[in-house]
Length: 332
Image 1 (cartoon, one colour):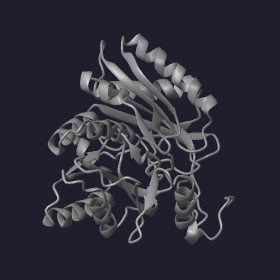
Image 2 (cartoon, helix red, strand yellow; image 1 turned 90 degrees about the vertical axis):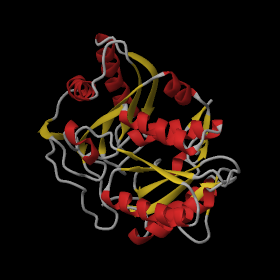
Image 3 (cartoon, rainbow, N blue to C red; image 1 turned 180 degrees about the vertical axis):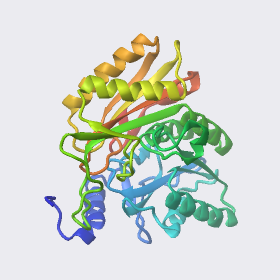
Image 4 (cartoon, rainbow, N blue to C red; image 1 turned 120 degrees about the vertical axis):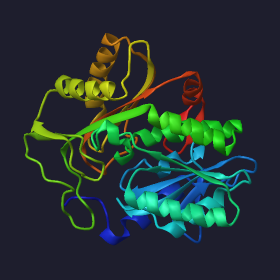
């Protein structure tokens, strides 16, 4: 294993120490728990937004703390859900008097721990709503969408509800729009190399030198199809058509496109793949409203990328276009 780390058991703490020092103008760490919050939190009169999950997905989750995005992140260990107390402390840290929205991926540990933390906060009189992201079309059939994993679509949710909160929306409105944004979002990824777990030095999954896996999860969960490596156009077409048919996206729709690198895929490759996505959408008379290309939700150094499409309406377009000032996501 080749990584620029010190002791494997210290990677998360040392990463957070460096992150906070580098971004002290935007984030601070709670003294009681492994929680990062906006420096101005809680913002009185604004619905607070809390997210969180395992470390190893940088810039998610902590890179999206900031104005127009999320207010706090409960930080878990590598690929592990944050514990209940951590989420609870994050909720209390951002409660500005109008309640708190929890945004999380559809993983059993996250759902359980965020749910228990919500109960603790509600018992103290803090209004809580949750939006659970399940955009990964590979992880379960369409008729069982509730079983699907959350992947890069969480970025879309953070952007939308973060903009709403800055506008002064109330908690029920944020729940409604966030849920709509998640339903309108579909993603599919591919990987050809795993990441190496710092704690064990072992890969997150095994795959042949000449193979790739469609639908592999952000933690190395099995995908839907393992096949020989294909060209950029071939694999992008396969993935994009699967995403289009799942909603389904139709002629005349407008979409936001997110091409997300999983850790070691170059921007050169991602732009080649986006070129094909744009061609396919044009062929289907689907208009692109906004495009994001880069590393937004990684799996350490996993080699691969994902394609995310979100169907836009007028309200979602306004929220996607709104400015934001996160640590790793700035939009003017």
